Length: 182
Picture 1: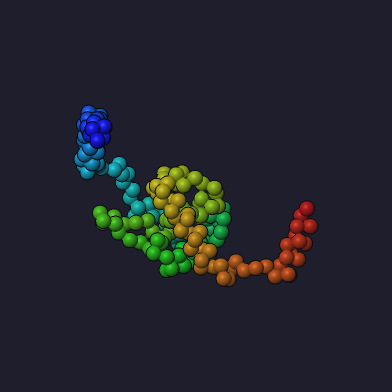
Picture 2 (picture 1 turned 135 degrees about the vertical axis):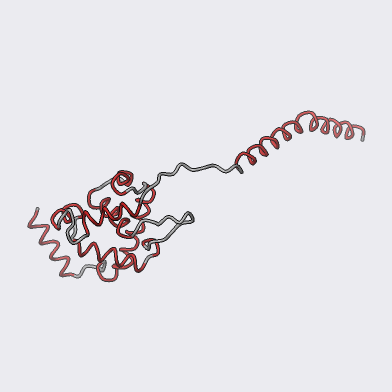
């Protein structure tokens, strides 16, 4: 029994001499980290005048006497203005992401028109989401979110009508077009 008492005493001594200081220091570090993480940290934000940018976009492409006509619109968006406006309207009606909202600081979100313009520019011209910041004042993250939500929304809304299986006639026409081209 004395052996057990000695080994028990040596274990207590080992814990007191070695482990307790380490645990104490670890606890101090954790408390310091928690105290510093509870401090309010300000994010660097860029003021983006979304309303002004939307008005510029409307003047450039969507007003009756727009700066750029139908030809430039079609070249830059790779679709006619009517189809684009139909997509914008359908997405805005069916998906909350495309509806204009206000955040906690009472700042207006980007409109459906701005989000769809960003998306089509990415799809039609292969723009990087970050490259849209200068013209549309839209961050890379917002541009990327708009792209994801646009693609999801278009597929969900139009898949029954436009994404159906090809018929045998459709397949035959595809083969003929391929043979004529190649």
